[in-house]
Image 1 (cartoon, rainbow, N blue to C red):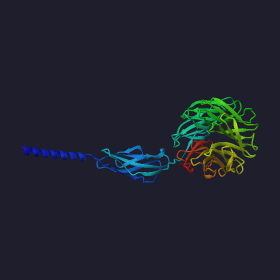
Image 2 (image 1 turned 180 degrees about the vertical axis):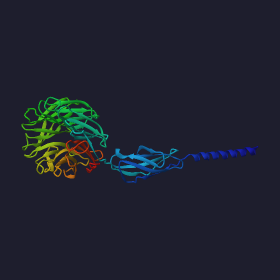
Image 3 (image 1 turned 120 degrees about the horizontal axis):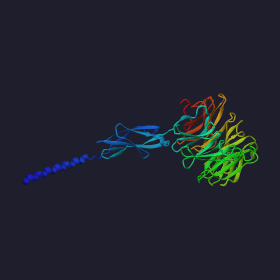
Image 4 (image 1 turned 90 degrees about the vertical axis):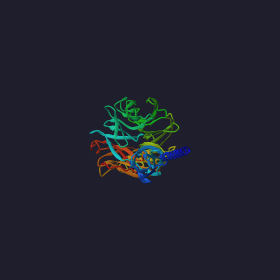
Length: 490
């Protein structure tokens, strides 16, 4: 009996030992292996990239997952051969780190080696917008947070506002105006995501032409509008939004009715109601073009004057306090015709002025850049062209501390104008110079540097889209950082 019990105990002990060993062997503690096979380390990539990888486990791989810059993208694949599709357009150009994490059935994970990939995305395209047998043109362009474009322009005698996605496909458009001529060249996105437009109307207001402010929601639907002026000629120029939600507008007004306008500065609340106005000028024709808000709450005004300066028309720069009272003023030019068109603040607390000039160029009308310090003293100037009768239409700062300038230049061989895009360094020297156009007139009015480092410009073209040699369409061009884009036929 004792022998039987002993034998049974030994058998049970062996059985339990075998069962414990079997359970231990069923627990997988080994992570899978994972290897990225494509793309190679230090590759330059763009648009949509397929990351291919191999992963092996002694039991079963459940999924592989893509990680960019140490963050999970949520992009996974659960079936071999493993591929992970990465759309790079939402990532900034430059270097990004990438690895693939593999998960097995038992919950073990393993990461591949980290590779470095350089994203280089520069979408380039041409797009046109407009109606048959009507002149359309784009005058100002913005890029929104979703990389879309908003273009302020004209269609016939009315103001148009168009939004296109990042590929140039139209999303919506609106027209504003009446039976007479209505025009606007200035727009900015407001703090609530909508838009404020400054222009001129002959259809509404108080007679003659009046300054017209239009406030829209983010989809371009008008929320309110208002007018400033009298029975004579009043014209709206640049506009800026104040920190309190109100606006500062520069324009012109023929207060006396003798045809000689003065610069008109208007301060409003957030609904466009006037808080105060100031005028600047003398006996001659004085025009306001641009206004910038200063850190102390004052303003820099830019325009032109026939009342002061060196004769004919000079570029006129006025510094005011927060209530529009003049603190100093400067003129630039000689006895030829010179007009200030826009002004930008520079990182050294100075400014750069864009103007149209007969004084600084090489005969006929040229475009000029004037760099000044914080007190208005000139540091340098540089004129472009002259013999072709060209004038600059917009100037924007670039990421490298330089500027991008758009204009149109007369081409004698075609007896027509082409768009001209000029990249300028911080000292006013030309980095590169590009032209866009064909055998008919093409005009460039506005440009900006896009989020990917390229440029978007707008103007008009006669022979693309719905245009013909007698009617123009709005032209939207997207370039790479060197100003290159697709040909007109692409």
